[in-house]
Length: 263
Length: 324
Ligand SMILES: Nc1ncnc2c1ncn2[C@@H]1O[C@H](COP(=O)(O)OP(=O)(O)OP(=O)(O)O)[C@@H](O)[C@H]1O
Ligand SMILES: [Mg+2]
Image (tube, rainbow over all chains, first blue to last red; front, side, top):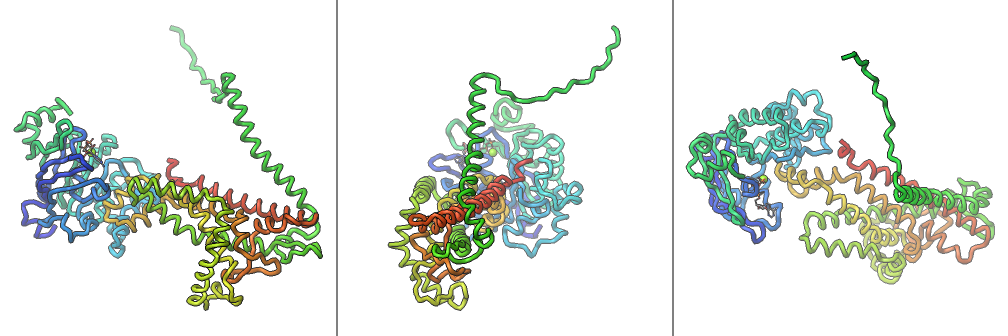
Protein backbone atom coordinates (compact mmCIF):
# COMPACT_ATOMS: atom_id res chain seq x y z
CA UNK A 1 0.00 0.00 0.00
CA UNK A 2 1.36 3.38 -0.88
CA UNK A 3 1.33 6.56 1.16
CA UNK A 4 -1.08 8.15 -1.26
CA UNK A 5 -3.74 5.63 -0.32
CA UNK A 6 -2.99 5.97 3.37
CA UNK A 7 -3.58 9.70 3.31
CA UNK A 8 -6.81 9.54 1.47
CA UNK A 9 -10.11 9.02 3.21
CA UNK A 10 -11.40 6.89 0.38
CA UNK A 11 -9.52 4.54 -1.81
CA UNK A 12 -12.26 4.16 -4.38
CA UNK A 13 -15.21 6.43 -4.84
CA UNK A 14 -18.25 6.26 -7.14
CA UNK A 15 -19.83 9.63 -7.89
CA UNK A 16 -23.31 10.09 -9.36
CA UNK A 17 -23.18 6.84 -11.29
CA UNK A 18 -25.99 6.31 -13.80
CA UNK A 19 -26.10 3.38 -16.19
CA UNK A 20 -28.25 2.69 -19.22
CA UNK A 21 -28.63 -0.41 -21.38
CA UNK A 22 -30.01 0.89 -24.66
CA UNK A 23 -32.98 3.04 -23.69
CA UNK A 24 -33.31 1.43 -20.27
CA UNK A 25 -32.08 3.39 -17.28
CA UNK A 26 -30.94 0.73 -14.78
CA UNK A 27 -28.94 2.67 -12.16
CA UNK A 28 -29.61 6.18 -10.87
CA UNK A 29 -27.33 8.54 -8.97
CA UNK A 30 -25.27 6.03 -7.02
CA UNK A 31 -22.74 7.61 -4.66
CA UNK A 32 -20.60 5.22 -2.63
CA UNK A 33 -17.19 5.48 -0.99
CA UNK A 34 -14.93 2.50 -0.42
CA UNK A 35 -12.29 3.04 2.28
CA UNK A 36 -8.92 1.31 2.22
CA UNK A 37 -8.60 -2.02 3.99
CA UNK A 38 -12.30 -2.46 4.36
CA UNK A 39 -14.82 -4.86 2.88
CA UNK A 40 -17.97 -3.30 1.46
CA UNK A 41 -20.98 -5.52 0.82
CA UNK A 42 -23.60 -4.70 -1.81
CA UNK A 43 -26.96 -6.26 -1.03
CA UNK A 44 -30.44 -5.99 -2.52
CA UNK A 45 -33.08 -7.96 -4.39
CA UNK A 46 -32.41 -9.58 -7.74
CA UNK A 47 -32.33 -7.22 -10.70
CA UNK A 48 -31.72 -4.04 -8.69
CA UNK A 49 -28.39 -3.35 -10.39
CA UNK A 50 -25.69 -4.66 -8.01
CA UNK A 51 -23.78 -6.47 -10.75
CA UNK A 52 -24.27 -3.51 -13.05
CA UNK A 53 -22.81 -1.22 -10.42
CA UNK A 54 -19.81 -3.38 -9.50
CA UNK A 55 -18.87 -3.64 -13.19
CA UNK A 56 -18.71 0.13 -13.49
CA UNK A 57 -15.82 0.02 -11.00
CA UNK A 58 -13.47 -1.68 -13.48
CA UNK A 59 -15.02 -0.56 -16.77
CA UNK A 60 -16.32 -4.02 -17.64
CA UNK A 61 -19.37 -2.55 -19.34
CA UNK A 62 -17.24 -1.62 -22.28
CA UNK A 63 -17.81 -5.16 -23.56
CA UNK A 64 -21.52 -4.36 -24.00
CA UNK A 65 -22.16 -2.12 -27.01
CA UNK A 66 -25.52 -0.81 -25.77
CA UNK A 67 -24.25 0.23 -22.34
CA UNK A 68 -24.00 3.91 -21.42
CA UNK A 69 -22.68 5.61 -18.31
CA UNK A 70 -22.74 8.96 -16.51
CA UNK A 71 -20.76 9.93 -13.43
CA UNK A 72 -17.24 9.15 -12.38
CA UNK A 73 -15.26 6.55 -10.47
CA UNK A 74 -12.24 7.87 -8.59
CA UNK A 75 -9.38 5.50 -7.81
CA UNK A 76 -6.87 7.23 -5.54
CA UNK A 77 -8.45 10.47 -6.66
CA UNK A 78 -8.18 9.91 -10.41
CA UNK A 79 -11.21 9.28 -12.60
CA UNK A 80 -10.88 5.85 -14.21
CA UNK A 81 -13.21 7.03 -17.00
CA UNK A 82 -10.92 9.87 -17.98
CA UNK A 83 -10.28 9.91 -21.74
CA UNK A 84 -6.56 9.53 -21.19
CA UNK A 85 -6.95 6.33 -19.17
CA UNK A 86 -6.40 2.91 -20.75
CA UNK A 87 -9.17 0.61 -19.45
CA UNK A 88 -6.87 -2.39 -19.28
CA UNK A 89 -4.59 -0.43 -16.94
CA UNK A 90 -7.59 0.19 -14.69
CA UNK A 91 -8.30 -3.52 -14.59
CA UNK A 92 -4.76 -4.23 -13.44
CA UNK A 93 -5.43 -2.18 -10.31
CA UNK A 94 -9.03 -3.27 -9.86
CA UNK A 95 -9.30 -7.05 -10.08
CA UNK A 96 -12.50 -9.06 -10.41
CA UNK A 97 -13.78 -12.46 -9.29
CA UNK A 98 -16.91 -13.78 -10.97
CA UNK A 99 -19.96 -15.65 -9.76
CA UNK A 100 -19.13 -18.86 -11.56
CA UNK A 101 -15.53 -20.10 -11.21
CA UNK A 102 -14.00 -19.51 -14.63
CA UNK A 103 -10.40 -20.73 -14.76
CA UNK A 104 -8.95 -20.99 -18.29
CA UNK A 105 -9.64 -24.60 -19.33
CA UNK A 106 -6.62 -25.05 -21.59
CA UNK A 107 -4.17 -23.92 -18.91
CA UNK A 108 -2.67 -25.68 -15.93
CA UNK A 109 -3.13 -24.44 -12.39
CA UNK A 110 0.16 -22.59 -12.52
CA UNK A 111 -0.53 -21.10 -15.94
CA UNK A 112 -3.85 -19.84 -14.66
CA UNK A 113 -2.18 -18.03 -11.80
CA UNK A 114 0.15 -16.18 -14.16
CA UNK A 115 -2.39 -15.81 -16.98
CA UNK A 116 -3.09 -12.16 -16.15
CA UNK A 117 0.56 -11.24 -16.48
CA UNK A 118 0.69 -12.88 -19.89
CA UNK A 119 -2.57 -11.33 -21.03
CA UNK A 120 -1.48 -7.86 -20.04
CA UNK A 121 2.01 -8.23 -21.49
CA UNK A 122 3.94 -8.26 -18.20
CA UNK A 123 5.76 -11.56 -18.73
CA UNK A 124 8.94 -10.27 -17.08
CA UNK A 125 7.18 -10.25 -13.70
CA UNK A 126 6.43 -13.97 -13.80
CA UNK A 127 8.23 -15.99 -11.13
CA UNK A 128 7.70 -19.13 -9.09
CA UNK A 129 7.64 -17.00 -5.97
CA UNK A 130 4.74 -15.02 -7.36
CA UNK A 131 2.82 -18.23 -8.10
CA UNK A 132 3.43 -19.51 -4.58
CA UNK A 133 2.64 -16.19 -2.95
CA UNK A 134 -0.60 -15.70 -4.89
CA UNK A 135 -1.82 -19.20 -4.13
CA UNK A 136 -0.93 -18.76 -0.46
CA UNK A 137 -2.84 -15.52 -0.20
CA UNK A 138 -5.86 -17.24 -1.75
CA UNK A 139 -5.45 -20.15 0.76
CA UNK A 140 -4.88 -22.52 -2.16
CA UNK A 141 -1.20 -23.32 -1.79
CA UNK A 142 -1.50 -26.48 0.27
CA UNK A 143 -4.01 -28.00 -2.11
CA UNK A 144 -2.24 -26.89 -5.27
CA UNK A 145 1.47 -27.14 -4.53
CA UNK A 146 1.86 -30.76 -5.62
CA UNK A 147 -0.23 -30.42 -8.76
CA UNK A 148 0.72 -27.09 -10.28
CA UNK A 149 0.97 -28.56 -13.77
CA UNK A 150 -2.37 -30.33 -13.70
CA UNK A 151 -5.26 -28.84 -15.67
CA UNK A 152 -7.18 -26.22 -13.72
CA UNK A 153 -10.42 -28.09 -14.35
CA UNK A 154 -9.17 -31.03 -12.32
CA UNK A 155 -9.86 -28.92 -9.21
CA UNK A 156 -13.19 -28.87 -7.35
CA UNK A 157 -15.51 -25.91 -7.84
CA UNK A 158 -14.46 -24.28 -4.58
CA UNK A 159 -10.78 -24.79 -5.38
CA UNK A 160 -11.34 -23.35 -8.85
CA UNK A 161 -12.86 -20.24 -7.32
CA UNK A 162 -9.88 -19.80 -5.00
CA UNK A 163 -7.63 -20.31 -8.03
CA UNK A 164 -9.51 -17.47 -9.72
CA UNK A 165 -8.88 -15.34 -6.64
CA UNK A 166 -5.18 -16.26 -6.80
CA UNK A 167 -5.18 -15.35 -10.49
CA UNK A 168 -6.45 -11.87 -9.58
CA UNK A 169 -4.00 -11.53 -6.71
CA UNK A 170 -1.04 -12.28 -8.96
CA UNK A 171 -1.76 -8.95 -10.63
CA UNK A 172 -1.24 -7.27 -7.26
CA UNK A 173 -4.45 -5.22 -7.47
CA UNK A 174 -5.42 -2.45 -5.06
CA UNK A 175 -9.07 -3.39 -5.14
CA UNK A 176 -10.86 -6.69 -5.71
CA UNK A 177 -14.46 -6.82 -6.89
CA UNK A 178 -16.39 -10.00 -6.17
CA UNK A 179 -19.83 -10.60 -7.66
CA UNK A 180 -21.50 -13.34 -5.60
CA UNK A 181 -18.24 -15.32 -5.43
CA UNK A 182 -19.72 -18.09 -3.28
CA UNK A 183 -23.13 -18.59 -4.83
CA UNK A 184 -21.99 -21.65 -6.79
CA UNK A 185 -20.15 -23.18 -3.83
CA UNK A 186 -20.81 -25.49 -0.89
CA UNK A 187 -20.79 -24.16 2.69
CA UNK A 188 -17.26 -25.39 3.41
CA UNK A 189 -15.76 -23.69 0.37
CA UNK A 190 -17.79 -20.57 1.16
CA UNK A 191 -16.29 -20.49 4.63
CA UNK A 192 -12.77 -20.71 3.28
CA UNK A 193 -13.34 -17.91 0.82
CA UNK A 194 -14.74 -15.73 3.59
CA UNK A 195 -11.60 -16.37 5.63
CA UNK A 196 -9.52 -15.46 2.60
CA UNK A 197 -11.44 -12.20 2.20
CA UNK A 198 -10.74 -11.25 5.79
CA UNK A 199 -7.03 -11.89 5.30
CA UNK A 200 -6.93 -10.01 2.00
CA UNK A 201 -8.44 -6.84 3.40
CA UNK A 202 -5.22 -6.26 5.31
CA UNK A 203 -3.66 -5.28 2.00
CA UNK A 204 -6.48 -4.08 -0.24
CA UNK A 205 -10.06 -2.88 -0.52
CA UNK A 206 -12.77 -5.38 -1.35
CA UNK A 207 -16.26 -4.91 -2.77
CA UNK A 208 -18.51 -7.95 -2.63
CA UNK A 209 -22.03 -8.55 -3.93
CA UNK A 210 -23.90 -11.13 -1.89
CA UNK A 211 -27.42 -12.46 -1.43
CA UNK A 212 -26.40 -14.09 1.82
CA UNK A 213 -27.21 -11.81 4.75
CA UNK A 214 -25.07 -13.84 7.18
CA UNK A 215 -22.16 -13.60 4.77
CA UNK A 216 -22.50 -9.83 4.53
CA UNK A 217 -22.43 -9.62 8.32
CA UNK A 218 -19.50 -12.00 8.67
CA UNK A 219 -17.17 -10.39 6.15
CA UNK A 220 -18.09 -6.76 5.59
CA UNK A 221 -17.37 -3.49 7.39
CA UNK A 222 -19.74 -1.40 5.30
CA UNK A 223 -22.96 -2.35 3.57
CA UNK A 224 -24.92 -0.65 0.79
CA UNK A 225 -28.53 -1.63 0.21
CA UNK A 226 -29.73 -1.33 -3.40
CA UNK A 227 -33.31 -1.34 -4.51
CA UNK A 228 -35.19 -0.90 -7.80
CA UNK A 229 -38.91 -0.13 -7.87
CA UNK A 230 -40.91 -1.72 -10.70
CA UNK A 231 -39.47 -0.66 -14.05
CA UNK A 232 -37.47 2.09 -12.39
CA UNK A 233 -33.69 2.40 -12.21
CA UNK A 234 -31.99 0.96 -9.15
CA UNK A 235 -30.61 3.23 -6.43
CA UNK A 236 -28.95 3.05 -3.04
CA UNK A 237 -31.47 3.16 -0.21
CA UNK A 238 -29.00 3.12 2.62
CA UNK A 239 -25.24 2.93 3.07
CA UNK A 240 -23.42 2.65 6.37
CA UNK A 241 -21.55 0.44 8.81
CA UNK A 242 -22.64 -3.15 8.45
CA UNK A 243 -23.62 -3.38 12.12
CA UNK A 244 -25.82 -0.34 11.79
CA UNK A 245 -27.47 -1.49 8.54
CA UNK A 246 -28.36 -4.85 10.04
CA UNK A 247 -29.20 -3.79 13.60
CA UNK A 248 -30.52 -0.23 13.43
CA UNK A 249 -31.44 0.46 9.81
CA UNK A 250 -32.76 3.97 9.28
CA UNK A 251 -35.01 3.16 6.34
CA UNK A 252 -37.96 0.80 6.94
CA UNK A 253 -37.30 -0.87 3.54
CA UNK A 254 -33.79 -1.78 4.64
CA UNK A 255 -35.25 -3.20 7.82
CA UNK A 256 -37.71 -5.32 5.83
CA UNK A 257 -35.02 -6.58 3.48
CA UNK A 258 -32.33 -7.54 6.01
CA UNK A 259 -34.98 -9.31 8.06
CA UNK A 260 -36.04 -11.32 5.05
CA UNK A 261 -39.48 -9.73 4.57
CA UNK A 262 -39.00 -9.34 0.81
CA UNK A 263 -36.47 -9.81 -1.97
CA UNK B 1 -38.92 -62.55 14.48
CA UNK B 2 -36.90 -65.24 12.79
CA UNK B 3 -33.56 -64.29 11.40
CA UNK B 4 -33.37 -63.73 7.64
CA UNK B 5 -30.15 -64.27 5.80
CA UNK B 6 -29.00 -61.27 3.78
CA UNK B 7 -29.63 -62.04 0.10
CA UNK B 8 -26.93 -61.34 -2.44
CA UNK B 9 -28.12 -58.71 -4.90
CA UNK B 10 -29.05 -60.12 -8.29
CA UNK B 11 -27.50 -58.13 -11.05
CA UNK B 12 -29.53 -57.47 -14.16
CA UNK B 13 -28.29 -56.28 -17.48
CA UNK B 14 -29.72 -52.92 -18.38
CA UNK B 15 -30.38 -52.61 -22.05
CA UNK B 16 -32.72 -50.39 -23.92
CA UNK B 17 -34.82 -52.45 -26.29
CA UNK B 18 -37.28 -50.85 -28.68
CA UNK B 19 -40.59 -51.47 -26.95
CA UNK B 20 -43.44 -50.43 -29.20
CA UNK B 21 -43.99 -51.25 -32.88
CA UNK B 22 -43.34 -47.66 -33.91
CA UNK B 23 -40.13 -47.78 -32.00
CA UNK B 24 -39.09 -51.00 -33.70
CA UNK B 25 -39.80 -49.62 -37.16
CA UNK B 26 -37.97 -46.41 -36.38
CA UNK B 27 -35.04 -48.36 -35.00
CA UNK B 28 -34.95 -50.60 -38.05
CA UNK B 29 -35.11 -47.78 -40.58
CA UNK B 30 -32.40 -45.78 -38.85
CA UNK B 31 -30.13 -48.78 -38.55
CA UNK B 32 -30.67 -49.72 -42.20
CA UNK B 33 -29.88 -46.19 -43.35
CA UNK B 34 -26.79 -46.12 -41.16
CA UNK B 35 -25.46 -49.43 -42.44
CA UNK B 36 -26.35 -48.72 -46.06
CA UNK B 37 -23.97 -45.76 -46.18
CA UNK B 38 -21.19 -48.09 -45.08
CA UNK B 39 -22.21 -50.70 -47.65
CA UNK B 40 -22.33 -48.03 -50.33
CA UNK B 41 -18.78 -46.90 -49.61
CA UNK B 42 -17.52 -50.46 -49.71
CA UNK B 43 -19.37 -51.13 -52.99
CA UNK B 44 -17.94 -47.99 -54.58
CA UNK B 45 -14.46 -49.01 -53.52
CA UNK B 46 -14.96 -52.52 -54.90
CA UNK B 47 -16.28 -51.16 -58.22
CA UNK B 48 -13.43 -48.69 -58.56
CA UNK B 49 -10.91 -51.30 -57.47
CA UNK B 50 -12.09 -53.84 -60.04
CA UNK B 51 -12.03 -51.31 -62.86
CA UNK B 52 -8.67 -49.97 -61.78
CA UNK B 53 -7.09 -53.34 -61.30
CA UNK B 54 -5.64 -53.74 -64.82
CA UNK B 55 -3.73 -50.50 -64.45
CA UNK B 56 -2.37 -51.35 -61.02
CA UNK B 57 -1.40 -54.83 -62.26
CA UNK B 58 0.31 -53.54 -65.37
CA UNK B 59 2.13 -50.50 -63.95
CA UNK B 60 2.68 -51.55 -60.40
CA UNK B 61 1.09 -49.39 -57.73
CA UNK B 62 4.27 -47.49 -56.84
CA UNK B 63 5.03 -46.64 -60.47
CA UNK B 64 1.44 -45.55 -61.02
CA UNK B 65 1.31 -43.33 -57.94
CA UNK B 66 4.78 -41.83 -57.97
CA UNK B 67 6.00 -42.10 -61.57
CA UNK B 68 5.66 -39.51 -64.33
CA UNK B 69 4.16 -39.54 -67.81
CA UNK B 70 0.72 -40.19 -69.29
CA UNK B 71 0.81 -41.77 -72.74
CA UNK B 72 -1.91 -43.58 -74.65
CA UNK B 73 0.52 -44.66 -77.33
CA UNK B 74 2.69 -46.52 -74.87
CA UNK B 75 -0.20 -47.28 -72.55
CA UNK B 76 1.90 -45.92 -69.75
CA UNK B 77 0.06 -44.02 -67.07
CA UNK B 78 1.45 -42.37 -63.92
CA UNK B 79 -0.16 -39.75 -61.73
CA UNK B 80 2.79 -38.58 -59.62
CA UNK B 81 2.79 -34.95 -60.83
CA UNK B 82 -1.01 -34.80 -60.61
CA UNK B 83 -1.09 -36.16 -57.07
CA UNK B 84 1.66 -33.83 -55.95
CA UNK B 85 -0.01 -30.92 -57.75
CA UNK B 86 -3.28 -31.60 -55.93
CA UNK B 87 -1.48 -31.48 -52.60
CA UNK B 88 0.50 -28.37 -53.56
CA UNK B 89 -2.55 -26.42 -54.70
CA UNK B 90 -4.66 -27.55 -51.78
CA UNK B 91 -1.93 -26.57 -49.32
CA UNK B 92 -1.54 -23.20 -51.00
CA UNK B 93 -5.29 -22.67 -50.89
CA UNK B 94 -5.44 -23.57 -47.21
CA UNK B 95 -2.50 -21.32 -46.31
CA UNK B 96 -4.18 -18.39 -48.06
CA UNK B 97 -7.67 -19.19 -46.79
CA UNK B 98 -7.07 -19.87 -43.09
CA UNK B 99 -5.98 -16.41 -41.87
CA UNK B 100 -8.71 -14.82 -43.97
CA UNK B 101 -11.38 -17.24 -42.74
CA UNK B 102 -10.40 -16.84 -39.09
CA UNK B 103 -10.42 -13.05 -39.37
CA UNK B 104 -13.85 -13.11 -40.97
CA UNK B 105 -15.17 -15.43 -38.26
CA UNK B 106 -13.68 -13.26 -35.52
CA UNK B 107 -15.19 -10.12 -36.98
CA UNK B 108 -18.63 -11.64 -37.38
CA UNK B 109 -18.69 -13.26 -33.97
CA UNK B 110 -16.99 -10.69 -31.76
CA UNK B 111 -17.11 -7.32 -33.50
CA UNK B 112 -20.10 -6.97 -35.79
CA UNK B 113 -23.39 -5.50 -34.58
CA UNK B 114 -26.25 -8.02 -34.65
CA UNK B 115 -27.56 -6.71 -37.96
CA UNK B 116 -24.21 -6.74 -39.67
CA UNK B 117 -23.65 -10.20 -38.21
CA UNK B 118 -26.79 -11.54 -39.88
CA UNK B 119 -25.97 -9.95 -43.22
CA UNK B 120 -22.34 -11.06 -43.22
CA UNK B 121 -23.29 -14.62 -42.29
CA UNK B 122 -25.78 -14.67 -45.16
CA UNK B 123 -23.19 -13.49 -47.66
CA UNK B 124 -20.61 -15.98 -46.50
CA UNK B 125 -23.13 -18.79 -46.86
CA UNK B 126 -24.03 -17.52 -50.33
CA UNK B 127 -20.36 -17.54 -51.24
CA UNK B 128 -20.21 -21.17 -50.12
CA UNK B 129 -23.10 -21.97 -52.40
CA UNK B 130 -21.51 -20.67 -55.60
CA UNK B 131 -21.08 -23.69 -57.90
CA UNK B 132 -17.43 -24.35 -58.55
CA UNK B 133 -17.92 -24.19 -62.32
CA UNK B 134 -18.89 -20.54 -61.89
CA UNK B 135 -15.80 -19.92 -59.79
CA UNK B 136 -13.77 -21.68 -62.47
CA UNK B 137 -15.17 -19.41 -65.18
CA UNK B 138 -14.53 -16.38 -63.00
CA UNK B 139 -11.00 -17.66 -62.50
CA UNK B 140 -10.51 -18.15 -66.23
CA UNK B 141 -12.07 -14.95 -67.50
CA UNK B 142 -11.40 -12.50 -64.70
CA UNK B 143 -9.05 -13.56 -61.99
CA UNK B 144 -6.37 -15.22 -64.13
CA UNK B 145 -5.20 -11.82 -65.38
CA UNK B 146 -5.27 -10.18 -61.97
CA UNK B 147 -3.57 -13.23 -60.47
CA UNK B 148 -0.93 -13.15 -63.18
CA UNK B 149 -0.14 -9.55 -62.23
CA UNK B 150 0.09 -10.52 -58.58
CA UNK B 151 2.38 -13.34 -59.58
CA UNK B 152 4.60 -10.99 -61.55
CA UNK B 153 4.77 -8.63 -58.59
CA UNK B 154 5.71 -11.48 -56.27
CA UNK B 155 8.36 -12.59 -58.71
CA UNK B 156 9.82 -9.10 -59.05
CA UNK B 157 10.04 -8.52 -55.30
CA UNK B 158 10.68 -12.00 -53.93
CA UNK B 159 11.94 -13.79 -57.03
CA UNK B 160 15.24 -14.60 -55.35
CA UNK B 161 13.33 -17.23 -53.35
CA UNK B 162 13.09 -20.41 -55.46
CA UNK B 163 9.41 -20.74 -54.68
CA UNK B 164 8.67 -17.44 -56.46
CA UNK B 165 11.01 -17.92 -59.39
CA UNK B 166 9.74 -17.91 -62.97
CA UNK B 167 11.56 -18.84 -66.17
CA UNK B 168 8.57 -19.21 -68.49
CA UNK B 169 7.93 -15.46 -68.52
CA UNK B 170 4.22 -16.14 -68.43
CA UNK B 171 2.33 -16.00 -65.17
CA UNK B 172 -0.93 -17.46 -66.42
CA UNK B 173 -2.22 -20.96 -65.58
CA UNK B 174 0.02 -21.40 -62.55
CA UNK B 175 -0.48 -23.35 -59.30
CA UNK B 176 -0.55 -19.94 -57.59
CA UNK B 177 -3.67 -18.88 -59.49
CA UNK B 178 -5.29 -22.26 -58.92
CA UNK B 179 -4.44 -21.92 -55.21
CA UNK B 180 -6.13 -18.54 -54.95
CA UNK B 181 -9.25 -19.83 -56.69
CA UNK B 182 -9.30 -22.76 -54.26
CA UNK B 183 -8.84 -20.34 -51.36
CA UNK B 184 -11.87 -18.33 -52.47
CA UNK B 185 -13.78 -21.57 -52.59
CA UNK B 186 -12.87 -22.84 -49.12
CA UNK B 187 -12.85 -19.56 -47.15
CA UNK B 188 -16.63 -19.76 -46.59
CA UNK B 189 -16.42 -23.36 -45.36
CA UNK B 190 -13.61 -22.70 -42.94
CA UNK B 191 -15.02 -19.41 -41.71
CA UNK B 192 -18.48 -20.79 -41.09
CA UNK B 193 -17.07 -23.71 -39.07
CA UNK B 194 -14.78 -21.32 -37.20
CA UNK B 195 -17.59 -18.90 -36.47
CA UNK B 196 -19.62 -21.76 -35.02
CA UNK B 197 -16.67 -22.75 -32.83
CA UNK B 198 -16.11 -19.14 -31.72
CA UNK B 199 -19.77 -18.77 -30.81
CA UNK B 200 -19.37 -21.66 -28.38
CA UNK B 201 -16.47 -20.09 -26.52
CA UNK B 202 -17.65 -19.48 -22.96
CA UNK B 203 -18.33 -15.78 -22.54
CA UNK B 204 -17.08 -15.99 -18.94
CA UNK B 205 -13.58 -16.80 -20.20
CA UNK B 206 -13.52 -13.72 -22.36
CA UNK B 207 -14.74 -11.61 -19.45
CA UNK B 208 -12.10 -13.14 -17.20
CA UNK B 209 -9.42 -12.31 -19.71
CA UNK B 210 -10.56 -8.69 -20.06
CA UNK B 211 -10.81 -8.35 -16.28
CA UNK B 212 -7.22 -9.53 -16.03
CA UNK B 213 -6.01 -6.67 -18.17
CA UNK B 214 -6.13 -8.51 -21.49
CA UNK B 215 -6.91 -6.64 -24.70
CA UNK B 216 -8.62 -7.94 -27.83
CA UNK B 217 -5.43 -9.30 -29.28
CA UNK B 218 -4.10 -11.09 -26.20
CA UNK B 219 -7.56 -12.43 -25.38
CA UNK B 220 -7.81 -13.85 -28.88
CA UNK B 221 -4.35 -15.39 -28.84
CA UNK B 222 -4.27 -16.79 -25.31
CA UNK B 223 -7.90 -17.58 -24.55
CA UNK B 224 -10.13 -17.83 -27.62
CA UNK B 225 -7.70 -19.54 -29.98
CA UNK B 226 -6.49 -22.28 -27.56
CA UNK B 227 -10.03 -23.38 -26.71
CA UNK B 228 -11.05 -23.29 -30.40
CA UNK B 229 -7.92 -24.78 -31.93
CA UNK B 230 -9.09 -28.34 -32.43
CA UNK B 231 -12.45 -27.25 -33.81
CA UNK B 232 -10.79 -24.90 -36.26
CA UNK B 233 -8.40 -27.65 -37.34
CA UNK B 234 -11.40 -29.79 -38.14
CA UNK B 235 -12.83 -26.99 -40.28
CA UNK B 236 -9.52 -26.53 -42.07
CA UNK B 237 -9.30 -30.23 -42.90
CA UNK B 238 -12.86 -30.10 -44.17
CA UNK B 239 -11.75 -27.30 -46.49
CA UNK B 240 -8.66 -29.26 -47.47
CA UNK B 241 -10.82 -32.25 -48.38
CA UNK B 242 -12.95 -30.05 -50.61
CA UNK B 243 -9.84 -28.49 -52.18
CA UNK B 244 -8.34 -31.89 -53.03
CA UNK B 245 -11.54 -33.09 -54.62
CA UNK B 246 -12.05 -29.93 -56.65
CA UNK B 247 -12.25 -30.59 -60.35
CA UNK B 248 -13.69 -27.96 -62.64
CA UNK B 249 -12.37 -24.77 -61.12
CA UNK B 250 -8.77 -25.93 -61.26
CA UNK B 251 -9.19 -27.43 -64.71
CA UNK B 252 -10.09 -23.97 -66.03
CA UNK B 253 -7.10 -22.13 -64.64
CA UNK B 254 -4.19 -24.58 -64.65
CA UNK B 255 -2.00 -26.26 -67.26
CA UNK B 256 -1.75 -29.97 -66.52
CA UNK B 257 1.82 -31.18 -66.97
CA UNK B 258 2.26 -34.95 -66.83
CA UNK B 259 5.90 -35.43 -67.66
CA UNK B 260 7.59 -33.83 -64.71
CA UNK B 261 6.96 -32.82 -61.14
CA UNK B 262 6.46 -29.13 -60.41
CA UNK B 263 7.67 -29.46 -56.83
CA UNK B 264 7.25 -25.92 -55.60
CA UNK B 265 7.55 -23.36 -58.42
CA UNK B 266 4.11 -21.97 -57.85
CA UNK B 267 4.55 -19.13 -60.34
CA UNK B 268 5.44 -21.38 -63.28
CA UNK B 269 2.66 -22.27 -65.70
CA UNK B 270 1.94 -25.94 -65.22
CA UNK B 271 1.17 -28.26 -62.40
CA UNK B 272 -1.28 -30.96 -61.66
CA UNK B 273 -4.51 -31.90 -60.01
CA UNK B 274 -5.92 -35.40 -59.95
CA UNK B 275 -9.57 -34.55 -60.20
CA UNK B 276 -8.92 -32.23 -63.14
CA UNK B 277 -6.92 -34.97 -64.82
CA UNK B 278 -9.93 -37.25 -64.67
CA UNK B 279 -12.22 -34.53 -65.99
CA UNK B 280 -9.85 -33.60 -68.78
CA UNK B 281 -9.10 -37.07 -70.11
CA UNK B 282 -12.28 -38.98 -69.53
CA UNK B 283 -14.24 -37.82 -72.58
CA UNK B 284 -11.98 -39.35 -75.22
CA UNK B 285 -10.34 -42.03 -73.17
CA UNK B 286 -9.33 -45.43 -74.58
CA UNK B 287 -10.25 -48.54 -72.62
CA UNK B 288 -6.91 -48.83 -70.89
CA UNK B 289 -6.91 -45.10 -70.14
CA UNK B 290 -10.35 -45.40 -68.50
CA UNK B 291 -8.89 -47.99 -66.19
CA UNK B 292 -6.01 -45.66 -65.38
CA UNK B 293 -8.38 -42.77 -64.69
CA UNK B 294 -10.44 -44.92 -62.36
CA UNK B 295 -7.23 -45.95 -60.65
CA UNK B 296 -6.49 -42.27 -60.16
CA UNK B 297 -9.97 -41.98 -58.69
CA UNK B 298 -9.20 -44.75 -56.20
CA UNK B 299 -6.09 -42.92 -55.03
CA UNK B 300 -7.97 -39.63 -54.68
CA UNK B 301 -10.77 -41.38 -52.84
CA UNK B 302 -8.33 -42.93 -50.38
CA UNK B 303 -6.57 -39.62 -49.90
CA UNK B 304 -9.76 -37.73 -49.06
CA UNK B 305 -10.87 -40.63 -46.87
CA UNK B 306 -7.68 -40.35 -44.85
CA UNK B 307 -8.00 -36.57 -44.53
CA UNK B 308 -11.63 -36.77 -43.53
CA UNK B 309 -10.84 -39.43 -40.94
CA UNK B 310 -8.16 -37.20 -39.48
CA UNK B 311 -10.66 -34.32 -39.46
CA UNK B 312 -13.28 -36.46 -37.73
CA UNK B 313 -10.75 -37.65 -35.17
CA UNK B 314 -9.60 -34.13 -34.36
CA UNK B 315 -13.12 -32.76 -34.15
CA UNK B 316 -14.21 -35.62 -31.91
CA UNK B 317 -11.34 -34.84 -29.58
CA UNK B 318 -12.20 -31.16 -29.64
CA UNK B 319 -12.37 -29.66 -26.18
CA UNK B 320 -11.52 -32.79 -24.20
CA UNK B 321 -11.76 -30.71 -21.02
CA UNK B 322 -15.54 -30.62 -21.52
CA UNK B 323 -15.76 -34.33 -20.75
CA UNK B 324 -15.38 -33.83 -17.06
N1 LIG C 1 -26.33 -6.60 -20.78
C1 LIG C 1 -27.52 -6.11 -20.40
N2 LIG C 1 -28.38 -5.62 -21.32
C2 LIG C 1 -29.59 -5.14 -20.97
N3 LIG C 1 -30.05 -5.09 -19.71
C3 LIG C 1 -29.25 -5.56 -18.73
C4 LIG C 1 -27.95 -6.10 -19.02
N4 LIG C 1 -27.37 -6.49 -17.86
C5 LIG C 1 -28.28 -6.21 -16.89
N5 LIG C 1 -29.40 -5.65 -17.41
C6 LIG C 1 -30.58 -5.19 -16.66
O1 LIG C 1 -30.14 -4.32 -15.64
C7 LIG C 1 -30.86 -4.55 -14.44
C8 LIG C 1 -29.87 -4.80 -13.32
O2 LIG C 1 -29.24 -6.04 -13.54
P1 LIG C 1 -28.09 -6.60 -12.59
O3 LIG C 1 -27.55 -7.81 -13.23
O4 LIG C 1 -27.18 -5.50 -12.27
O5 LIG C 1 -28.93 -6.99 -11.30
P2 LIG C 1 -28.38 -7.65 -9.96
O6 LIG C 1 -28.73 -6.75 -8.86
O7 LIG C 1 -26.98 -8.04 -10.10
O8 LIG C 1 -29.30 -8.94 -9.88
P3 LIG C 1 -28.91 -10.40 -9.33
O9 LIG C 1 -28.97 -10.28 -7.85
O10 LIG C 1 -30.03 -11.25 -9.85
O11 LIG C 1 -27.58 -10.76 -9.85
C9 LIG C 1 -31.77 -5.73 -14.69
O12 LIG C 1 -33.07 -5.25 -14.89
C10 LIG C 1 -31.24 -6.35 -15.95
O13 LIG C 1 -32.28 -6.88 -16.72
MG1 LIG D 1 -25.89 -9.91 -10.24
